[in-house]
Image 1 (cartoon, helix red, strand yellow):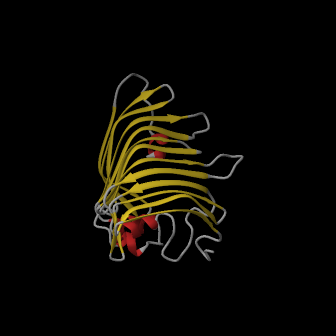
Image 2 (tube, helix red, strand yellow):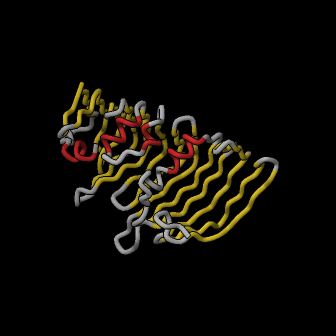
Image 3 (cartoon, helix red, strand yellow):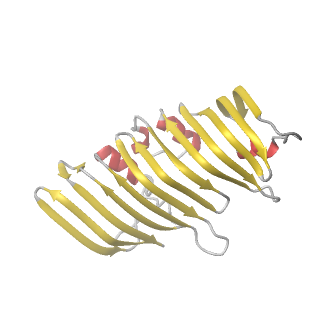
Length: 245
């Protein structure tokens, strides 16, 4: 999308650019059913609609404003939907390292209001789906020039089973034990329930965690309705996740 809009010539008169292509080949990737409707504005493009089918039977839809500055940097503000019917195929396209938890998912995806730029990505009014697990909330990621990258997550979900837990955990830690956010500061809050794993079910799980250079700080861990009991804890775990202590 970025390169296509950077290369798209602007009309010299007001109007709408319509692009409909059955397929676009980029390297070894084929993007199908491409449809773009956009109008030029002073600092970029107003995208009325964008739709495409990506690998993994993935539907991409977007509308909003694309901003292009004088350095050719790309920014997008609007709505974005990504619906993945075959998560294993989509994940394999993105990365060779695909966790088994992702391969087992029947479907995945998200929709959100987004504000995307080179140094900051914001997903608000987020709806995230990982198989049967559904979450709502917000994610903000920043990569400032003069500070360490950071990720802030605030998510709330409903029922979560062991497959959903494994898929959700794979966002943070690979099945080989690698911390996917090793180069970033992570602030994470999640509330879900009921949560089932290991033959046990808790009515609610409410957590607030911070991860800094391998130090996991548990500001809040509250488990309610676990075999009639409630559990609360705080603490710190060093060398997470390689050799937690």
